[in-house]
Length: 325
Image: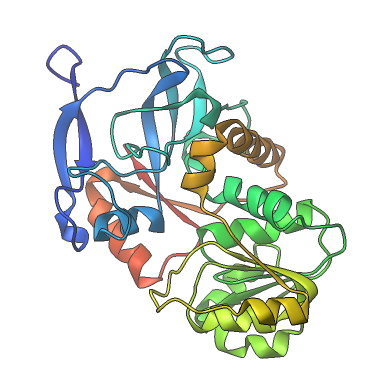
């Protein structure tokens, strides 16, 4: 910090473009408003969502500080905030307004989860929780309404959110849990995250039918997901990592086949239901603390944010990349 703690270091998107547009800059330290907290950031998760911001796929005002999740310690609390205090370690979603790629960030108090001391949940691991693990609980529990014994298929099973969906499906009592991956090198990685079977994505027709399918890939995987739904099956759409053209879904086909398609966007959900999102985050933090939810984390310094974005875009990552702020 400098200038009597009024300025901080941040990574900004000054213009939309490739990873190289990301720049380090000095910005003003934010202050929490009513119902908010500010956090001294220790680590920030690196996510495909931030790639979309940088590309201009998501409309954000420029210059923009990306960063949808962090870990760190409470710096200050706004009016009306209870249960959180300065110095307290937390994991937090910063997805509504961004700002996580910085030394200090402000977010809704309901989106911050206090951390318990323990060997399974340090600040590095905690930075990988808020987006992917929270999403996994919300998608399977609240959106798909997964029932005990039901079967689940997850695309991109070795990725950040895919690594959590298989494990959370188990915690919620699923029966058969199957993943797909884009390359043979990722098959064993996905198996390590609790999947019974792992298929290459273009071989998913051999996987059978499922009660719940979660697709964040899009393109051919989306139509394949519909084809794999059992009667009364539910497809949850939560991304388009392939960058493919949108896939049209016939309402009449859903009617005749007794299938359901739902969408889930964590940013939009957290903006409207911060307390619900926060409860899911705290649930994920507790499971990680207890050792029933495993997160594979790789750390890079914030100065290597360009490299982190390139690796995410290439699809070469497994588990989660976290930036040390």
